[in-house]
Image 1 (cartoon, chains in turn green, red):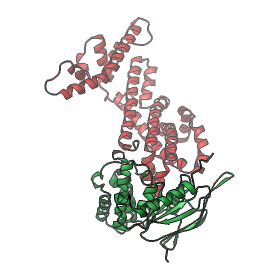
Image 2 (image 1 turned 90 degrees about the vertical axis):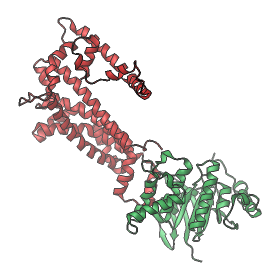
Image 3 (image 1 turned 120 degrees about the horizontal axis):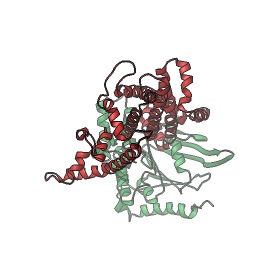
Length: 264
Length: 302
């Protein structure tokens, strides 16, 4: 079985002065092309650190990340990140924010007109073309995150990394955006790695859920397959036994076996 | 320009035509509303609310000054004397009788030119050094203590040294402007660069901007509010320094004009020059603030 994205025995230790903290311990995971994998865990378990290592923003202490059998250890557009707090540049318009990445990635392969069309295409995918000349301060939180997703998609990443992309949104906006991401995944077949702490979100969106134990020295506790057919419908799933079973498994893992212990 | 107008208002003597500027007409519009546009009335009221209080204060001050300095034996001239003595300078700022006997316009433009040179160099060098110090820990460790000491040296203390180095007044004055205004620009730029959110750096890393693109597309816009704070302090300091420097180097310039007026006991001319220096300093500050507002639109909000 040829893995598309492979996390190979990753350890991560932070050193500050004499104190060293082992955050991640021996994380190994393989992800197939087109798969949607979620990593869930309590806050502070190092799941964002793990995503940053995959993105290349942080280095692993031991082990490494292989994408199509080649080691990646610096950030790049092949692993585009949708950041939790959208991270749009406030001095650029929506269009310019997306274009920033497009211009870099396709500088030699697409003409100016093609790049422009590609930016608009991606803004259309997230239904944000109407706001292309607005600045981030002029649009809502959900819209900002849509633009963040468009920016990442427009780089045509091999793996799309979502770092708690819906965490800062209200429940209704979140549901709406989850549906959008699901539709995009269905349509484009991206490989997606998502960090979340929302059980419903993980079950609804993922093909597999990776559950992490509490830190320090967090490990992968359990990997759960979500055997639900796509396209999935939020309302129908609410009473689907398979969905409820998966949900139950994740909840048990998080709240019984690896209950979050407040650091004293 | 406003001074005579105020005087006319306050003391109600002569020259009613001498008030082409000031917001007097706007103020007068307010009591009789034109039937045409309520918008204008509202605008007039808003302008009046901003313009009238300082005008009243100014008028009162002028009156006070007039009363105090009118007595015989007073060392300083009252406003009415100032106006009478400097009428020619006010109404003909463009004469040029050769040498240093020129209209105020030429003196002011000579000073402004020096400031423009010195300040431009300071802005370029300051932003460049500030970026270096903000970006590199080692540059900061090496340079910051040096900057902290150098920036406390008063502007004029540099002048003899620069005269020795350049052997000419013009470059020396420009150097003094530069060395005075460069520190706040460096320090504020460095703070701005250091405060760039990690998020923006991450975005740049994922998109793989090269250092030059990172500088122009992320650093400068992100640090712009800080940079402009530095630039604003800088322009104020250069205008402070130029007057003092010109007093010493001589030639054409508002600083020397003041010194020359003092040597010839033309106190009224000094007062007029101070008035111009104040107004231009204010305009320069507003100018940079205006540019900052345009350039940093959106950056402050998020």
